[in-house]
Length: 366
Ligand code: 13P
Ligand code: 13P
Ligand code: MG
Ligand code: MG
Image (cartoon, rainbow, N blue to C red):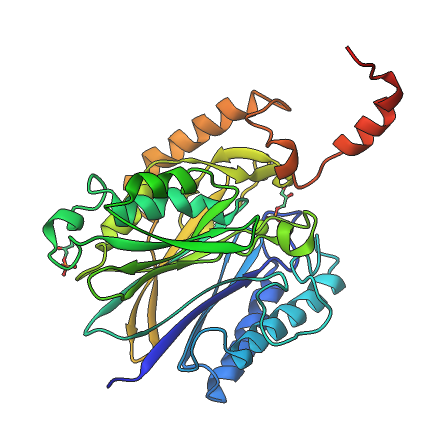
C-alpha cells in the first residue's frame, strides 16, 4: 500500500500590519525560515507559507497523520517566533490568536485554526486550500453544500458514477461541543436546517459515500467558545480534494462566484459579502473588509506541494468582486442597525452590557 500523506493547514493571526489589514513581511520571512529548517530536518515533506489579510497560513505535508504533536508544536513555534517579531514592531494585536502561554500537545483549543486530512495520494491529486479573513468557519457552510450536494453547482453529482451516491457531512454544533453525520441527497433538508444556522452549526468534514474517502475538511475552532468570551474572529481555512470522483476544480470554485453574506467584518461584529480575490488583493481595508477569500491550488506529487496556483486570479470573478462591493455598500448604509450589525451574542466587541448597566435605573416595568 502506498504511503499516506497528511496535508495540514494551520493558521493564526499573530499581529496585523497595519491594523488588521495585512501581515508584516518580516513575519512571513521568519515563518518560511522555520519551516524550511523543519523540511531539512525531515519533520515535514514540503510547505508553503501564505497569508490572507492579517492571517498567517502554514500549509504543510508530512506522513505523521492528523493531530500529530510534532507538527502542531512546529506550527505553534512558528506562531510564537512571529509573535515576538510582532511585539518588537508593535504590530496590531501581537499574539492575538495564541490563547495559551505554552504549547500542550495540540494547537486545537489553543487559538490557531486547523484543517488536516490524511489520504493515499491518487495518480493525480489536485487539492484546493481556501483561506479567509474577517469571517468565521460558518462561512464555508454554503460553498461546501453547493460543492458536494447541489447538482446545479456540481455537474459531477449527476454525471460522475463515483459521485452519484452523494456525500456524508460531519456537522459540528459549536455551542454544545458535539457533532453529527448527515448524508445527502437523502437528508438534504435536515442538513440545510442545521447548516443554514451558520453561527452555531459548521461543517467540519465531507466524505464520499461510495467508499468513505475524505473529500474536504474545514477549521471549526470558534475562538469565542474556546476562550469563554469573544477574543478574536476565527478566520477559517478549508481543504478540498478535486477531480475524478470529487468536484472538478471549477465546481469547487463555482460557489464563490456568489458573494454570500458572512459574519465577521469590522470589529468581528458585522455582516458583509465574501469577496474572492487573488493573493495580492487579500488586504481588507474598507471598513476592515469586505471579508476576503483566497484559494491556493496544488498538485501533490509524493507529498511535494506543486504550486501554488492563485485560483481566484481570474477576470471571470471580476463581476463577483464588483457585486461584493455593491452589497458591502448596501450593508454599510445600515450602520449600527441589524442585520448589518450582528445579534448581541455574536458581537466580538460590545459595549452593550455597560450601556445596559448605565441605563438600569431608567428602565421601568410596563
Ligand atoms: P475528471 O472526471 O477527470 O475529474 O474530469 C472532470 C472534468 O472534465 C473537469 O471539467
Ligand atoms: P481579525 O479577526 O482579522 O483580526 O479582524 C478583527 C477586527 O476587528 C477587524 O475590524
Ligand atoms: Mg487581526
Ligand atoms: Mg484576520
